Image (tube, rainbow, N blue to C red):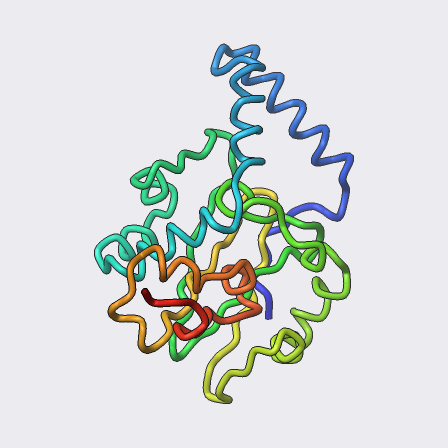
Length: 207
């Protein structure tokens, strides 16, 4: 069953009006200027899956950082220079393990941790994914070529306008001697959504 954080239906006009009202209020109260908002929007638009991969690779390499990331993702992002705007939805990092495999979805629209990994892929926004991932998550995994043992619990986490989820994929075996740069190349956008796994180490050169 999906964990659902939505409080409103699929209403683009509602969210557009809400964003405009929040922007106007922030400017009116002197919290920021329109230029500040546009600068931050440009920064978020410049983000890509490579940014998220760097963060998660650092978590693989540094167990203490991983603890901080799972406990307070936004503070941990800031440690690596990734600052989020005050009005940005809260982002939580959830770890995939040998026992539990998490998958992220936004069942009512296309809420996504853009501030860290950029724009969502087209399929993430399509009704086919948004509906099937809740009803048949293992079937969706198979469509992406992801096979899990029957004993692994599959959990679907539903994003919302206020909350986003970033998946920390399970670190592949045989990666102990790899640098963070090499580890980051194993982390794909699909693995950060949870429909895929991190790549095997032999998929990239080690020299």
